[in-house]
Length: 346
Image (cartoon, rainbow, N blue to C red):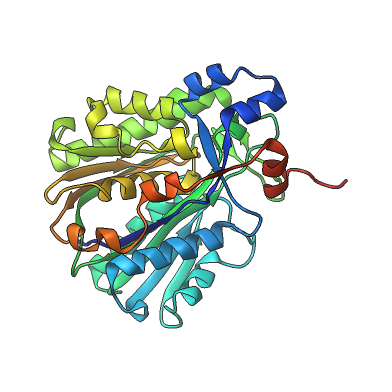
């Protein structure tokens, strides 16, 4: 099967603390932090969007892949916050990294798992021999209505993966998906903020799909939790992530590296890809990794991955997740609201 040839990430430097948001709405910040397992989140600058985040992540992935971008035959950008309703983000990225014109490109949307859907599509094209390399990106500048619980978690960031067969840093062993029509979260055309069906959010939505996706991969691969050195899950909040890990038999040593929600919030389509990148930043050759995404609506994509020796050759060639997490500048709620366009003229 194909593997990861290069990976790159981007996280905006601006942050807002849970206490700052709670102060505006009269909530208890300690209860919020404890309940959601989140302390602060990333905030996109006024000149940052899914396209700029995707371009930065893609350029960083090329630094590690060390390939001619003209060899990339497919570009997929998964997001639920594409800057244009009609105009692909993928073509902007492809042009910016000088991969055009001989390639196929498309935007994907499946709530928070559009990035991993792109990875699967790229894997298929590479494994079939249709393209030499495919680029899959998961990125978002997530929306949360003023005063909504999503304001505490909806953040910004993304990760890009170049997939191919030669000179890989990690290899795909298998993938498995689990999908149903479960209406836990949606946003209609033209609406600025999403709606979430509270009673659907946990058990029939997130946990049913994440656990089923993971167990399906276990069955397909003949593995169990103890066979993996690291595991990553989609992380709408830290609480769901940890609960899913423990339900499947993983311990803290296995799941802690990929848990980024406490420090950058939920980057939606970027969440699982960023968590995987954080693991690749520290993984040793031979380590086995499991990654399970989740997208409302609803579905999960699960991957079994083995890290190989080349990871140590390329790791330092682009910014690591931890470096971007540490590069932060705090803003207050007024600046945050301005950056996110929450203040609108009637």
